[in-house]
Structure formats: C-alpha cells, structure tokens
Amino acid sequence: MKLLVAVPAFNEADNIGFVLEEVKNALPDSKIVVIDDGSDDDTSKVVKDLGVELLQLPFNLGVGGALRTAFKYAYQNEFSHLVQIDADGQHDPTQVKLLISGLTASDIVIGSRFAKDSSSYEVGFLRRLAMRWLAALTSFFCKTKLTDVSSGFRITNRVGIELFTTRYPSEYLGDTVESLIIAHRSGLKISEVPVTMRERISGSPSQNFFRSTWYLTRATLVILLAALHSNPK
Amino acid sequence: MQTLTLTSIAAGLTLTFLVFELLRRGFLREKYAFVWLAFDTFIAISLIFPSPLQELSAFLGFKVFSNFILANLVLALILFAMQLSLEISKLEDNNQKLAEEIAIINNKLNQ
Image: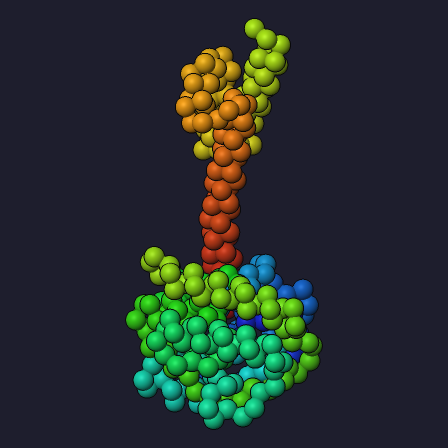
C-alpha cells in the first residue's frame, strides 16, 4: 500500500504542527501532504519547517477544492490510497488502521463518530438531528447504511482517487455528502467503521446553532441535486 | 414622428454606439456584444415599425401595448443575467482548476 495522508488546512498554524507530528509517528511509512487553502497565517511556514510536502493554493478554494488538489496529486504520483485527516486535530491518526481494515470490501471507508461501537461524541441536539437526517438521506441514495456522512476522516482507494481527480465536487458540502453520492453512482462501494474523534485542539468549531440550521437546508438541497444529476459530474 | 419616438431612437443609437466603442477598445467580447446588438436592433425595429408588434401584443392578450414591451424587456434582462451566471460558473470552474494545477506545479518546482 502506497498511502498518501492529505491534510487540507486553512488558517491552522496553531494546530497543524502537532497534527503533523502525530501523523508522522502513527504512520511512518506514509507520505504526508498538506494542502494550504490560501491561509493568511503561518500555516505554510509551519509545514515547510517540519519538512512536510506542501501544496500551496494561490487563494481559498474551500475544502472540496483542496481535496481535489490532493486527489490529483495522489493520482499523478501513483499513490494507491489517500486518507484525509483534518488539520484541527479532531482525527486520531492511529485510527487510520481501522479505516484500512474496512478497505477489503469497499473503495471508500468513512470513520464514523456515530456507528454502533463508536464512543460518545458530544454534539448539540440540533446539529445531531441535522447529521442524522443527512445520514439517512445519503444512506438512502447510496443504498448503504451510513451514520456519519459529514465525517472528513476517510480513506479512498485507487479507483476512488482516479474518479475524484476529475469529479470531486468543490462546492459547499460537496467534499462530504455529494462526493459519496457521486462515488456510489459511479459504482464504488462505500462503508464505514466506528472511530473516536477528539475535540479541536484550539480555536472554535465552525458550527453553531444558526449554522447548523443553514447547513441542514443547504445539505438537503445538495443531496437531492446530486441524486438527481442527469450524468454524474 | 412623435417626440417620444425620436428620444427613444436617440437612446437606442447611444446604446449601439456604446457597444461598438467597448468592442473597438477591446473591453467587450464579441459573444456578449452580439446579444446586446440583437437587443438594440429589435428595439430599433419595433420603434420604427410599431404596428406589427402592436398586433402581436393584442393577439397575445395584452390590453396595453407598453406592458407588452416592458414584459419583453424584463424577460430579455432575465435571460441575459442567466447567461452571465452561466459564464461566471464556467469561469469559476476554470479558475479552480488553474489554482489546483498551480499548487501541484509549484510543489514539483520546489523539489
């Protein structure tokens, strides 16, 4: 397995150093690449000082754009698998092996906070409700039981890498739910494994009450559009 | 000819002149100019020969001719705004692809 660890980062100078050290320790045989999504802070400097490979986007594209860059990079450099890890320290790189174990039967494996054996992950009531709804809707369209579709902790094999090089959605929420529907419609198998996620090391999470509601509305629209798309783009 | 017709024709000519001037200076691409010029021509013809349009308007059930003109104008503007949205979407898409390629190429160069 030639594994690429892709870490999309936007203004994460405070967290990324720790995250990268942790990934290096947990996955010494993999290659790490940080996609700096047009940060205004010292993110890219921290990455360079650590000697980690950097893909510097000239301006902010959003997570979807950053990840598509990573998929292109993985494809061109002939990596067999790409695992996405958030730069905010939420994902524990020692759990990547759990994701890998799920690859035997599928092309994409999602690390789920809410699967049967996951330990409890604290989220607000409204946000939890929104996530359940999205999971149910996505599961329906993907014909697979999924409990945590907005998780950014995933591994994708070569088939998925090739697909996402050109078809990774860059718009809002495209990187999570829409990409799953595209993958399913292109004949890829998706599964999930239970993982434990941590609180962010520093900074505030990007979700609050109003954002959750807004997220829910837009996400539903995104899923419906993705499912109804005439040819999977 | 009525004063109103003359002012309208003057306004139409100004618009046409503006489009030509923007084209000449290279500020406007032909594909957009074409839409505006077609728009201009339609207005000019309808001003000079209003009667066929008036008949069409009555046939379509408009009680007041000016409502017919206004409805057409609004429709044309909506279509034009839509075309611009489409063009912007395409541009954003291309822009993003370029940004991705630049990031990868920069990474290769710095190796």
